Length: 171
Image 1 (cartoon, rainbow, N blue to C red):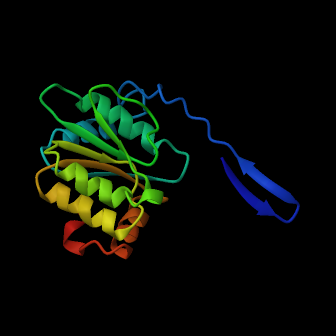
Image 2: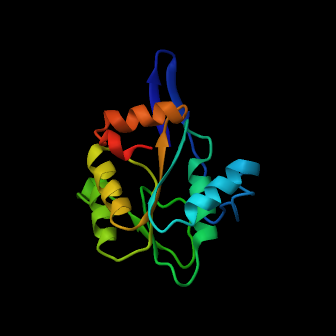
Image 3: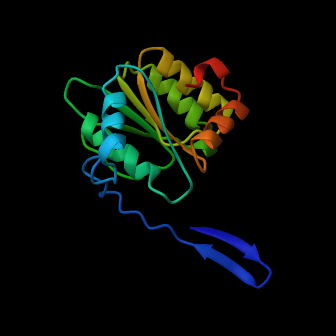
């Protein structure tokens, strides 16, 4: 629930999410053709950062969950860091960040990196510290999945640079 005081009264937005529903695969999340092939190719790599960018309310978490469902195999240790956990996924260790207690997203990512996971999903990148830790995880041999609110790919790159990522890391 989000409220916003306006000149003619309060504006209220309620986001209803069924925590048990997520697309079963990338096709169900809306990918097809070359985009689907490219995403599957990237997700087979043992390390790196896959960043899903888009405006709010356009399905970034759904795409990440669909990708996690496809990557979920017994030999792979998968950890998610979420604020809050939006969808329960079996055979995946899901961590709820709680910034109000001092265990924010950056701290949860640092803790997850100590768990020897193969794949790390961070639902959002709220600050430069989180971005730095996510990059460390990707450079340290993990496949990292995350989302960033941006209108398009060039805007996402500009946002990453504004947050302090080293330009040589962006490709």
